[in-house]
Length: 89
Image (tube, rainbow, N blue to C red):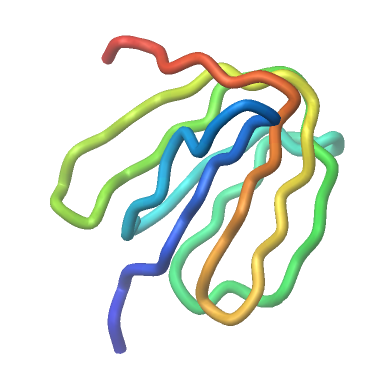
């Protein structure tokens, strides 16, 4: 089973990220949540905080987001955020 899935981060102005990833950790309203490949379907509101993304190539990227929505379905995830800023690692 492939341990990766497609993850996109979109803001009102641009597509910030569109990559194959191993995992993400994102700031849900009820607390941080992690998503791995083949995760159960999920829709969650997001609060302001940091999103950690582990890329399929082994790299890592981090983003600060404002409020938004995360949708996980069919081995892919989309994060729609009010604003997104990449954090230097």
